[in-house]
Image: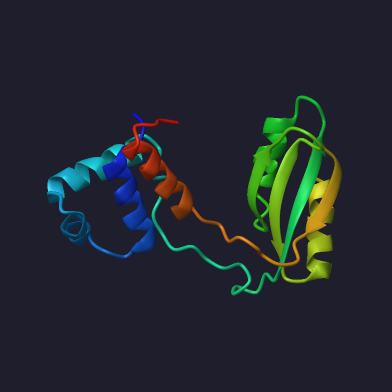
Length: 162
């Protein structure tokens, strides 16, 4: 079921005030607590809300280097290689992709030497044929969902569905 205007308002509030109680969310939105809880349960069940918890800064944890590592994988080994990559703690995300390479990973490291060590570990993962690394210099747009949620709300209010 696509998100409606109330769903978008709930999601925006969750993003703007993540540590507020369900009772307070209901009060702010002017809906019954049971209605709000039912909406939250549905949004979780539908996979819109995928988790709760703090967003952490790898940089503040001492991992000051962010790199995107493209991996070329032996044909037919994508799933096994992906499972093996999950054992590398410095990989904080990985996606199968089209274009130049088969997997795109987001990797953090303490410094350039540590990044080299991580890349050397990646090259040794069975199925990895080649890597290409791009180091991020500065974050220009932080990870965000609020503008998208607001757009969903505007679309729902206007009767447009994705």
